Image 1 (cartoon, rainbow, N blue to C red):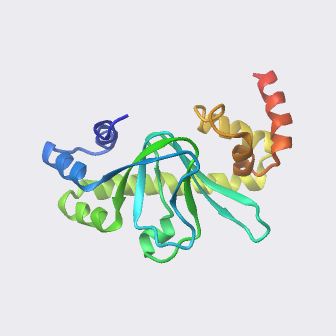
Image 2 (cartoon, helix red, strand yellow):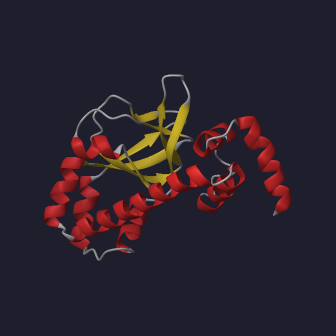
Image 3 (cartoon, helix red, strand yellow):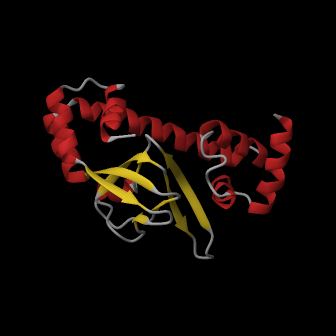
Length: 194
């Protein structure tokens, strides 16, 4: 996918003129990441939001016992950042890492605010993304509190069908909150049932 395709995806939610597209295209920066390369590090101020052009990224934290907690996967066409740090411009709690070789476009907070002034429809675009993200995080929290591990895995498969075979099982296990061994057993049962 190219940056032009990324602009086409934005245009699915809001109207953009050619001049708007040119300004956006001049504003964001393309970055290529290799597998396991961090885009943002915990403890840093996150200056950018990233739109995944190809590949897949994840945001995660590591607790005091060394356990990884994956907050988000971002496959192609998804945005990812440490939202707290991006908005507040304070050090963040999350790292963002490429799961595979990936390409992203980066939009700085400063440039985002400038674009809001010059292209007011972009505020609507990011509001829609933020609302959808809030709903998804709320549902994930409820699911983690009330659903079985098998149901959480089924939800993962439904939400991220392209990642089931592309993402290491240990990362999927960390995302749904089970051990890799339990996921392997559960995955075999799930595949037999479909």
